[in-house]
Length: 312
Ligand code: UDP
Ligand code: MG
Image 1 (tube, protein in one colour):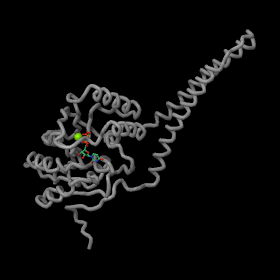
Image 2 (image 1 turned 90 degrees about the vertical axis):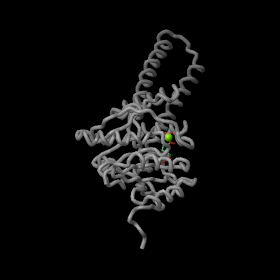
Image 3 (image 1 turned 135 degrees about the vertical axis):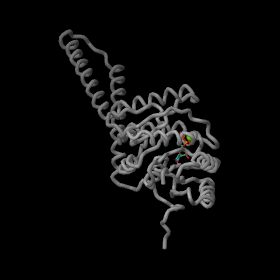
Image 4 (image 1 turned 60 degrees about the horizontal axis):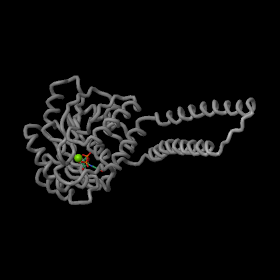
């Protein structure tokens, strides 16, 4: 088989048939598999996937999770089951036009020196706030992790199989796919595109989830926040020491009476705040280590369609 198209699905009953239709239309001249990963949907997505599978067993495979494990786990499940020359990840809501799959495929077929193609969101249709916050995120991510991270590079990507093997060789439970994709290296070509409107339903990445996604990325790929705590501590210590010397000189040498209640309260509160913040940062890393050492599976499969794993 030439291409595996991996489609993570979470509560997308209004979209699965539409994306399937679009993919089959687009890929009619390619040897392909579509691998739907149902990430614990609570609506009728899986029923619809079963029907799609029964109507097209030649091209369709389905994995169903026992609960919602998150999009990154769904991507991992897709990649670990990909055995083809190329693997491509695409969202199920038609925001990413399947026609670009052919663009990516053609590029990799004609450019041996590249191993991966990533579609980059031009953000033309997003609000100013979203544009600015996303660009900031990529800047901070790039600086903190020391890896170049292209602003807007999405999960809409195509890999050669050697890249897939590298990505799945990293077994961390708490996965931040975008970071892993750039961490493994390889030659990546970027193509700009415009994200379209959702076909049906709502985005699962609301502001709160986006925020936790961003902080997850930062904490998973960098220890710079810990270094920042050390630096802040050092700066405050130096300032306090200078201030202490000044107080000693003022009281002992100049005999001045220094009133202190208000300034003392400010210093105590600020320092208390910084200490709690730093403790929180350390706690975040310990919590991550705590969850990682358990080595729990990245996802749990409830059932699957199209794989030779019948229970005898
Ligand atoms: N998704 C998933 N698990 C989740 C959340 C999302 O598999 O926990 C899938 C979702 O079904 C979609 C893709 O990930 O195919 C992108 O999600 P969404 O469209 O909500 O994100 P956005 O495009 O708003 O970033
Ligand atoms: Mg979407």
